Amino acid sequence: MARAKLTTKKLAQRIDLGYFKHPHPFRRLRFILSVALPVIALLWLGWYALARNDRIYSGGRMSASHAVLSARCSTCHVAQAGAFSARASDQGCDTCHDAPVHHANQMFTPTCAACHTEHRGHPRLAVTADISCTECHANLHTSGAATHFVSDITRFNGGHPEFAALRPGSVDPGTIKLNHAIHLKHNLRGPNGPVQLDCDDCHRTVRPESRWRFGSSDAHDQPVNLNLRAIPPSMDAGRAYMSPVTYAKHCAACHGLQFDPRFQEGAPHDTPEVIRAFLVQKFQQYIPGHPAELRVTDLNRNLPQQPIPSAVRVLTEQQWVMLRVAESEELLYRKTCAQCHALLFVANAPWPIVAKSDITQRWFQHAVFNHDTHKLLKCVECHSGALTSQETADVLLPGIQTCEKCHRGGREAAESRCFECHTYHDWNREKGVKGSFPLSASSRDN
Image 1 (cartoon, rainbow, N blue to C red):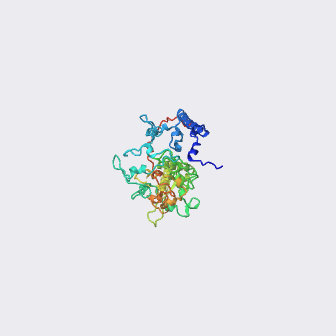
Image 2 (cartoon, rainbow, N blue to C red; image 1 turned 45 degrees about the vertical axis):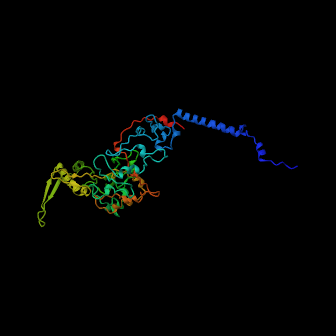
Image 3 (tube, rainbow, N blue to C red; image 1 turned 120 degrees about the horizontal axis):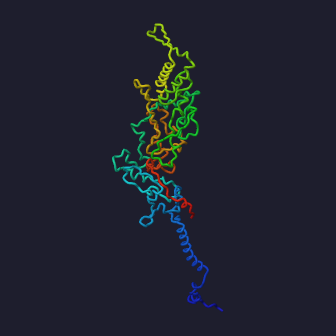
C-alpha cells in the first residue's frame, strides 16, 4: 500500500513544543555554573579582601625592586579624598624614598610616576624615556639666573654637545709632569731591564685584581675618596672609576728617590718637612760609625792654570749632618723631584713650595661612566691621544664622536638614552628616611 504523503503541517504536529520545559543534563549544568561561578568569584574576592591582598587588582608584574609590594597596592596608590588613585602618588613614594630634586632652579618637578612607570615587568625603573629629560632640556629655562648649561639638547646621537672637558680652552688642571708618549715607547728602561708599559700598569679601577707591576713592595691600597657626587647610591663605584695614580703604587720601581751614594734606600715620597726629618735621621745614624768623614777638604780654583790649594776642615757631627742634608735636598729638589713636580723656590725659605698635584679623579661631574662595563675594549680605542700626548695639559678623554660609534640607538647598538649616563635626582642632597613598611606584609601569598 502506498505511503501517505506527509505535508509540512503534519510534520510540525509531531514536534513537542514544550521540549525546553523537560529536564536535560546540559541545561542543568548551565544553570549550576551560572550560579556557582559568580558565587565562587565573590568568595574569592572576599577572601582577598579579608587577607588585605590587592594583587588581583594589579595592572601587571611589578619591577624586581618593588616585587614585595605586589600584594599591597595601597602602599603606592594612596587614597585621596576617599577615592582610589589609579596613578601612584608621590606621597606613597616618599614613604620609602626621599630622592632630592634635580636642580634648585628647575621650573617644575614632575611626579614620580611620570618618569618611573611600574607594572611593566622587571625592567629597571631608572630606564626612563628621553622625553622625561628633553621636556626641559630641549629648551632649558630656569627660575633663577641664566644657566651655563647647553639649553637645546634633544638626544645623544647627533643632538648632544661635545663634553665640557673637551671644548676649546679646556686643559688638564693637573700639575704632575707626565709625557704619555714616552712612557708608551718600546724598550723603555725598567727596574730590571727593558719593559713595554701598558695602560693597565697605571690605570685600573678602584678595586684592582692584582699587584701593580712597578710599585714599591710595601705599597698598599688605601681607601679612596672619589667624591662621587650625584651618583645613585645603588651604583658600585668600585669598578666604575679609575684609582688615582700614586707614586708608591705606580712609579717607585722606576723612579727612585736616591739622595746619597752612602745609602741604598731612597727618600720618602712625602712633604718637605717629612723628607728633612728623614734625611737628618739617616745622616745622624751614619756619622758615628764613620768619624773619618768629619775631615772635609775644601777645593778652591780661581784660575784654570793655577794648582788647587786644599784646605782641610774638621766638622762637628751636627755640622756634617746639616751639610749632607743640604746637599741631598739640593739634589732632590733641583733634579729628582723637579722631573715630575712643579716647585716654587722662595728666597730664604727652608724648602720649596710643592704645587698640589690636582689630579682629576672624575671628569664627568654631571654624568656617570663605568669603566668596568667597557673593559672588553682596548684602552687606546677610546684614549687614542695617549699614544702621542707629550703635555700634561692634554685632556685625553674620548670625544662624543667616539662614544657615538657604539651608543647610537637601534637594536644593534648600545643604549643611548639619557638615563644611561645621567641621573635626575641630586644624590648629594639625599636625606635619610625612616622605614614604616612591615615585613609581614611582603610575605602574603596569592
